[in-house]
Each structure stands twice: as C-alpha cells, then as structure tokens.
Length: 310
Image (cartoon, rainbow, N blue to C red):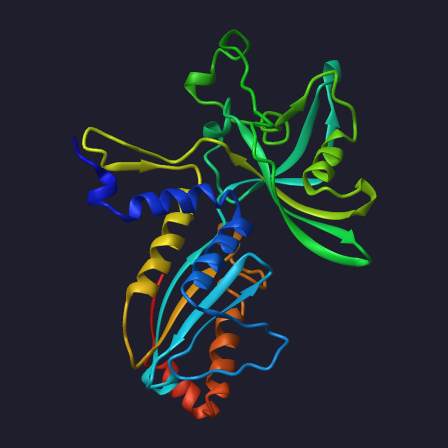
C-alpha cells in the first residue's frame, strides 16, 4: 500500500498547519512559530531596526499579516525575490452582540458573509468559533487568540418536504437561512459571552471587543485510490501560505533579498492596512533599504530588479 507520508513528506506537515489555522489570526501565529524555529528575528515596527546582510527577520501587522525576509550578501541592489499568499479564507464573521433569540426560544448567532464562500457547503456541518478577543487584564488591554475547540454550532437545513425545490436551485437568504444555531431553550441570552469568558479565563466585564469567525470543524483528509487528493475547508488559501513559506525557507539566492509575504483580507478586496493593496510591503522594503545604508535612488533601482510570485 502507498504510504503518502513517505512519498510526500510535506503532506503531514501541511495537515498539521491546516489543523492549527482555523482562521487568519491562527494561521499567522503558526507561521510565526515556524519562523521562530528557523531562527528568524521578530522585528517590532516601533523599534529601531538593526539589519545585517545574511540576517533573517520577520514583521507582522494586525496579527493577521506577515512579511519575512532574508538579506542576501548583495543587499537591496541585487533585487528582491518575493513569494506571497494570504491568510484569510471565505466564511462567516460573527457580528457584535450576536445572540438572537428566535422562535421557540432557540438562540442563533448573527453573522455576515465574509468573502465568497460556497454557501451550501456550510449546512449540516459541525462548526465552531475562532479569532481574537480584546480583554483587560491587570490594568492592561491585550488581544488573545480564541479557538473553542469543540463542535459548538451548526447551520441546519430543513427537511425536503419543507423545501421541495432545494434540489432545483435555491436562493439562500444569508440573514435568515445561514445563521448558525447556538443552543435550545435551555440556553439563555448572554451564554455566548459567558462561554468565551470561560475559555479565556477572564471575567465577562473584562471583554472589550471580539473579532471572531465561524470555521468548519471537518479535519483535512487525504483520499483517492492512490491517496492523491487532499481536502480541507480552509484550503483557499492556506495551502499556498504553507507551500510558499516552505519554498521561501528551502530556496536559496545568496545575493538577493528573499521575501515571504502573507497578507490578509484578500477575500474582501485587500484594501485594508494589512492587505496586499496596502503599503505594508512597500514600507517594509523601503525601511529595509534605509537600514542597509541605501538611498532612495538605490531603492527604486533595486525595485526594478525585483520578481514577485503570487
């Protein structure tokens, strides 16, 4: 029998990455740990940067985007080789004060569509919630990652005798048909925030904001007669995030500045401060150039020699 782990050694690592990255914030957190393991230095944008030829560095923005770079001995003058991907996936974002008490006392969560998910694939699947929460702890405000790692929610479909035309094509009402069910009549208003507080081990009154998404609980799987296929709910675009980073880490150009960029919000147009349409990459390259003692003319000359694979 074919052992895909032996033939494709990165498959297991990819599966681990997918399992560790239910939403964008977790994807970047996992990429950071991979870079730390590879001896990269984290740069704080508010600190003075000390950049050296041959050095390995990375910077994050909004905890949902990341740029890593290795400075070749040729410096910026040798040009940049960039590979990029994005950390977000299409799905559903949970609105503030999301609990909705519906008929028969059941509670649903109010959500909005994020990007372009294939809607029918979200029905009748175990779902949960992940993202970040802003909390106050010991007089300080901080963002904490949250993943409620259990089957928590479901977007149920109705029996076919209640929707006879479902197999002939059905226009779903996103604010009616796609709201996830949280609990039955025993669930009370406020239980969702109480659940989050319990997961984070904080008092409810110390929760000041939430940036949470639904995610599909189905695990990545390898399948097919020859185990040649892989399926995962967040495959767009986490498979590119992982393989791009591996190419960046394993590739070698001792002269150029080698760069891995993982942006956020591609699914909604990339126009945020952490998106590919922002100045995040430009600012990082420009600052890198200045830290190596190059002038503005050198920066634009180096940019003309650059190559980017997206």
